[in-house]
Structure formats: structure tokens, C-alpha cells
Image 1 (spheres, rainbow, N blue to C red):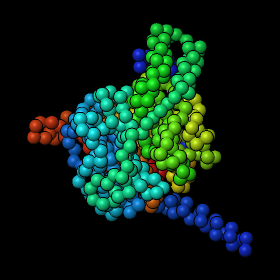
Image 2 (image 1 turned 180 degrees about the vertical axis):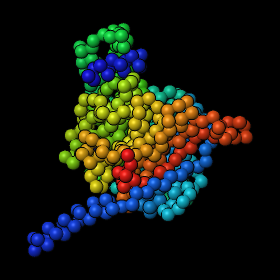
Image 3 (image 1 turned 90 degrees about the vertical axis):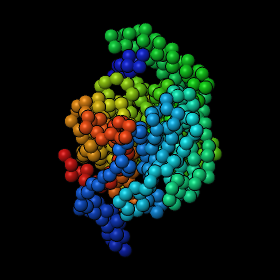
Image 4 (image 1 turned 30 degrees about the vertical axis):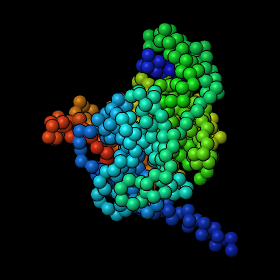
Length: 429
């Protein structure tokens, strides 16, 4: 089945004893009872007013003092616009309105794009993003900054400014070539994937994998990095050049980095990681290939260094980012566009069996499919210390009656924040 997907991709390209027992039962039962009796709620607001500027790819974290911090990229475009920079805003604990925007990262005359953040076990804030060197995604150079002082007004005060040198070696090239060998052996020509298209793609992958510069550039972030056991940092990366994924791993908080084996599939990018109860890791990835589209999946049993073959999940995906997280009560939460074609609806789903089924789903946004539908996409989700959930996402309207600025440009784009709880999701239909 996956080989058939690969063919379609080629064509489209061309997670007291009795007293002790009673106390232990209470510790387990009370939180569940509280969650079940919790009153559902949802609040949402725009972080800043709609504008004509492109604002996209947000990420949200909760600071130690309870504030929320969000980053996104802003400018006149994406990789081809040299004015693109990473911006941020802050929501003070208990406040209703977001702070004025501030610059988080700006490489003059270069686009700074797909940013992500997390707070490490030392309570330091990390900002990670790619700077686009030559206005193509394949020229992305990964960077990161670390701050100990980030809870004051305005931008964080960065203590560390580094390049994340992604260094796939000969093992990477061998893995790519082995997968190309397998696809060559098992391919069956079809109208969707004629021999010449398959041959050209396989040849290109072999060439890229053998080119040291091509395999070191072009890697980008999207979802939250994953901290394993408070000791290992796993940064999910993807490449639009290869159109598959890779994990950057450090066990010394950035002093040294190594990379996982490549996760090679039919257009699997932008991985997001959860941990299963047996200790293994599970990732869902955006489907960058042709219809029918599904989130791709893979698993790791060695802390993120090697990953199983990429397969389709049952979850639809229109070629848009998604994020999956572990919740403290054992459930998984997933935020995604649950369509195969458009980004007109954005759903939050919950699973109590580690993704085997998703019993509850509710929509943060849902427009009827049409040319005037909005695009609600590239979501970020996290669980706050109080157990509630926060999501941010690109809020892009596409309606004819949009307000226009003084120069006649439609005010259409911003970042939106939603605050809700599990009860709100489970109450939905």
C-alpha cells in the first residue's frame, strides 16, 4: 500500500497497607473525577488586529510565572521576502489582552521563518528557526537562541545565539540509497507514476543524498521540540528538498548534536512527537504528497535515534501542519485540519488509547467549503500547569467583504489564540 502512495507522491512531486491503598486510590481517582466534573469552556481572541502582512506558523509556551509567550513569522511573504522576521507577544497571567508585538529574531536582508519554542528543564527559553539563505527552502540554515531572562516586558534577552549544524553523514546517504533501491525493485509502472517519473525522482534523491551541502542545508523546524526524561532534547526537522523528516538530538543541551536515521516516505514532513506508555516515541507528520492525503506516522524505541518505516495513519490531512501532545491524564491531544483538501476547518481531537481511536473531536474553526472560506492552519497546542489547553494558529480570512487598509490592501491575516479544556472537547460532537 505504501509503495502505491510513493508512486502517487512521485507523480505529484515530478506517541497500614489498607490506608496506603486508600491514599493511592485517592491520588489517582480525584484528578479523573475533577476532569469529569469540570465545566467546559472556550475563550478565543486575535493576538493583534487583522492586517495585510503575512503572519504565519505560530508557537505557544507557558512561562514559569504563568504568562503565555507566542512567536510567529511576519513579513511581506515567506522564503522569497527578505523582510520576514520572527515576532512575539506576551499574555500576562490573568490578563485579557496581549502585549504589543516585539521582534524575537531578525537576520537583516534574509527571511527568518518557521519558528518554534520550548522551555527546558533549567527554565530557559529556546527559540529555534531557519534563516533562508537564497530564497529557497532548500537553502534553510537552522539557528537557535536561548534566554534566561524572558519574563519581563518586551523581547527576551538572549544569552546564546547559535547555528544548529545539521550534519547527516554517509549513513544518511546509505539509508536514502537503500530506500531508493527498495522502491526500484518494487515499483510497478502506472499512469500515476510512469517509469520515467520514478527514475527521475530516484536519481535526484541519490544525487542530493550524496551531496554534502544538499544534505546539510534545508532542514527546518515546525512543532514543539520534545524533551525526553528531562535529559535528551529531540528537535523534529524536515526538508522540502528531500520531502521527508529527520530528528536532531542533543544530550548536552546543544554542546553537541547528532541526527537520527532519516524518516523516508511519500512526502512526510513537519513531525510532531509524543511518548507511549511503554516508553517508545510516536510521530505524526504532515502529508506533502498527493490525494488521498493522510497524516504519516512512525515510531522509535531507542529515544528518537532510529525510526520505523513511515506509513499512513487513518487521519486525513490536506498538506498542512498538525501537532500532537501528551496530556497529564494519559490522553493524547491532536490539533489538525481534518480534511483532505482545504484548511477551512481546524479540529482538536482526544484519544485515550494512544491514537488507536480518537473518540472526541471538536472544532475551533469550521467554515463551509467555498472560495470565500478562511484558512485556519499551522496550529500549536500545549497544556498549561492548570491542566487547560492553549492553542495558537494562523488565522487567514479569504472573504470578499474584508476591511481594507489606507492603501486598499485587505486586512486578512493574524494569529489567533484559543483557551479551552478537555471537557469542552469531550462535550463536542
